Length: 237
Image (tube, rainbow, N blue to C red; front, side, top):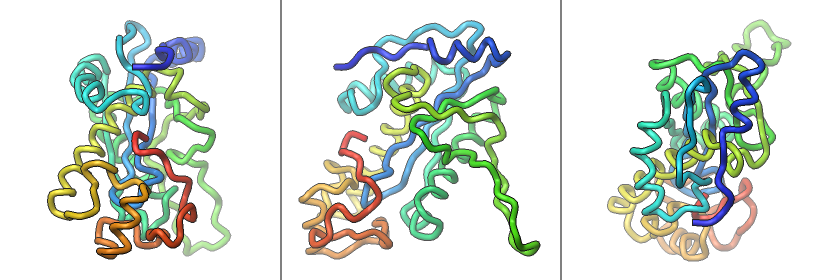
C-alpha cells in the first residue's frame, strides 16, 4: 500500500455550511474499451464519522486489499451505492451522459437510506448533476437530473477525501467483478486481466476476434487506431 492516507478534513469543512450528510463520489471504467462505466457513492455522517484505516484511492491498492476493504467500507458508511452504465448505453448516449446515468443509479440507492446534503465529486467537471440548460425549442425535453444536492468538484479528491476514496474502492471492486464474470462468456479478450482497458494485448485480441457486444463500438478499438478514444485510464483505474 502506498500514498498518504485520505482524511475527512475536507468533508468536515461542510459542517460550517450546515451540511451533516456528505457523499463522496468517484467513477471507474471511463477509459476502458469494453464493459460499463461504474460510479460509487459513499455517504458519511459528519456528526460522528471517524477515519477508516487502510482506505486509499483504488488505483493505489491491490485487488486483495480492495476486496478486503469492501465490507469495512459498507459498515463504516452511513449509506452507499454503486451504479453502472453499459457499453451499449455509452454508445447510445455518449460517455458523459452515461456517467451521469450510472451516478444517478448509485444516487437512487443512497436515497433509499438518506438524503445527502452535498456531494464531493472527484475531478473538475460536474458530470453527475450538470446545471440544466434552457431549451430554445418547446418540444425538446430537458433531462431531469436525479441528483438534487449541490455537487462540489475537487481535483484529486480520491487522494485526499476519505469518502471519495472509499467510493472509488466500491466502484472498482464492483466493476472488476463484472469484467471477470464477462471474461468467462467472452473468451479471448483477457478481461479477467485487463478489465476491458486499452492494453496492447486487448487491442490485438479485438483485431483478431472483432468487437463483441460488450465493446464500446463507437470508439476506435483496434491496434491500428490507438490513443484516439476518450482519455484512457490505466488498468487499475
